[in-house]
Image (cartoon, rainbow, N blue to C red):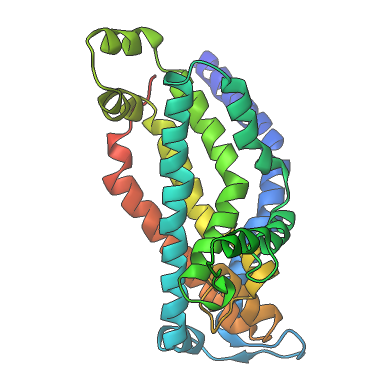
Length: 302
C-alpha cells in the first residue's frame, strides 16, 4: 500500500513539473489568443466605435446585418475564390514542381530549389509594390512589351475577376517557395527502391505520381493544403491593403480585409467582430470537411 501511495505522489509531482514548465506558454496563449478571442465574441454583441466610453448592447443585430447584406455574400464569395485559386497555385503546382525536380530532372536541382524558394525571403509588402510596377497598365514592363505587339494591357485593378487573380498571383509568388520546399522534402523521403522498381517495370511517370508519390507524401500534402486555405484567408490581406484597399466596389476584398476595414476605417467594431467570428466558423467548417473526407485517406509512415 505504501508503495502505491509513493507511486501516486511521484506521479503527481512529475505532473506538476510538467504543468509548471508549460505555464509560460499557456500564459502567452491565454494573453495573446484566448483573451482576444473571447473579447471579440463579446464585442460582436455591441455597437461601438472604439472612441465612445460606452458600448450599446445590440444582441445578434450585428450578425443579422451581416447575413442580410448582399455585400457580405460578395465578400465571402471573393474569399472562396481566393482560396480556390491559391489551392491550385500553392498546393497543386508546387506538388508537380517538387515531383519533377526530384524525380525527373538530373541536373541543376540546387539551382531550381534556390530560385523557387528565394521569394520567400522578400516581404509581401515589397512584393506587392514590385508587382504594382511590373503590371502597371500604362508604363509597366509587361504593358510596354505587349505594346510592341500592338496589344493593350487591361487595367486589372479596376476589373472584377482579374483583380482577384492578380492579387492571388502576387500572394503565390511569395509563399510558393515554402510550400514547394516542404513538399520536395516529403517526396525526397520516399523510398528510392520503390520508385526504381516502378521505373524498371516501365510504369509511366504520371502513375508513379498519382499511385506512389501522392499517397506516400499525403501527410505533408494535407498540411500544405490546410496552410494554403489559411493563406487564402490571411496572407492575401497584404496585397489587398497595399494595392486595392478592397476595391473596386469590394471586388477584391476578402473576409479578413473587410473585418479590418469595418473596424479601423469605418469604426464599426461590432460588425468587424461579428464578421471575424463568422469567418472563423467558416474556417472550422472547412477544417471539419477536410477531416471527414480527406484526412481519413492520409498515409502516415509510422
